[in-house]
Length: 117
Image (cartoon, rainbow, N blue to C red; front, side, top):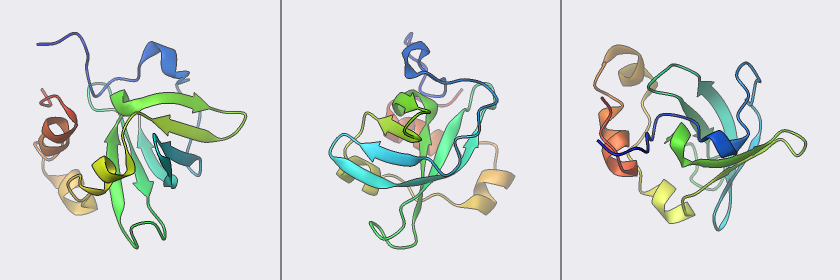
């Protein structure tokens, strides 16, 4: 298993446990993708869900915590290390499957670079 865990916030990201980042803008490498609609601090599966608003109309995307480069609380912005196309091509986020299927996050782990254990 690699040292990098896609489901854990990077120490350099500026993540602070308990800080509510819902509503923060989300910036990909090449531009804005929407706003954080939810975030999870669950150990071993931390992630954010992004409402892509008008960029990909009506779509929500899940980004594992390890894709986050920086959380700027002053600017209320989350910077991720993926391009807009990489995010657009990610598996669709399904709230019902997320809540009911323990293995649901595995597809995101594979897509973003690491199987979910």
